[in-house]
Image 1: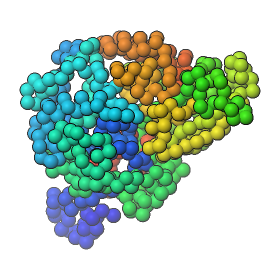
Image 2: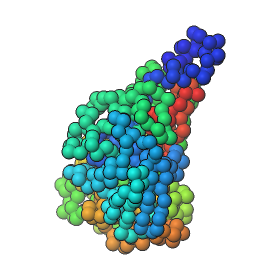
Image 3: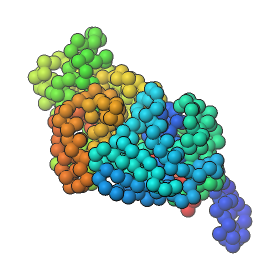
Image 4: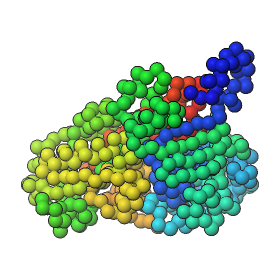
Length: 524
């Protein structure tokens, strides 16, 4: 029960009389439980949602997304496409960092340059900044960005790049941020304390003048990986809201008069990487010896694995009906979505025939790796997929681990088949560039291409998709979607349906990008 609820019950008539004064009393402290903890507090260290979701409480990008996925003002109040290679972004008037210093064009330019200086990033932000060839101040509030070629998605790219204070962060290492150094942002909150593996504590940023003002004086984000423990914390009143409601408990939450359930179809596509290297560390014979030649390189083997997966069964039995099977990488309505591309049909006998055609009539051995605290039912999905592979002769076992361990290992190409997801994609070129482009760090391409997939034809189409004409772009991206599907470049499973639970008296607008923003939880 919030402080305001108790106050109102005690002073009912008075509360009604001074309703206009009630918000400060009601909106004092808020606690929310997230399912995954950040790997770093440095806004530019690793391009991963678990980090961004926490960091974006205290920092802002120039451009944000609304709950329905549309571009919206962030630190930039507006942006203008001057010509095909030139954009102006106007900093919000009066914008200040949490230390009271003004946000300047110099801070913006520094922040766009900084990702390239980060050493040993497991997933670099340079994929969003490499296209920018020039940065200069037009005036005190406007930064002009130029690109070598037409870059229609530059505002979309800048959603992912946080603006930091040059004065506060210059010279810091990424590890310094966990202690509070450099944690000076322009977002709704200011940093108070980070207890690794446990929580982040924040206070309202009194200097914030943007569109996402928080009703809460203080907020604590707790990290509770275990789904049952997370729900128990909500039921006990230790937190007022949780994300990723455990699917077995959806009915319980719906029927609890003290709770509200919020759901939203996610832009997060859950899929499997399959290693394209000549030799893969977890592809073995039936005795466990690593095979000299990696069968996953054969498109027939990859297609067989996809055909072995009963996506309907995963949706119904693992996901409790809250997922949407897919063969597309982006949701309907997005550039590059092809409605005629339907989920791969479950066909275990056909899968066995393909394995035999590829020279593996008796299958082989495989380990499926995955996270156990990042995606909805991630460990269960990995186990279910492995069982389905085993039924077609690919004897599979499972190894899962926390995302903070899993992501760095994936970035080092340590897996053969890896369960993971890509979220927030509202344009096919975005996951193409990150997940499927031939690796080219200098251009920010293939920065999370864990499978080492490379098809020059796909890269050619990605280059052509720079067209500023949306109809031309969509046609090119639809062609690219066909290449991805025919190559079985990765194995799509489903789009998640996100679920939040809140105490009665609170509201929240579910988001397609799955973000859990404390400032968007509001008292009714």
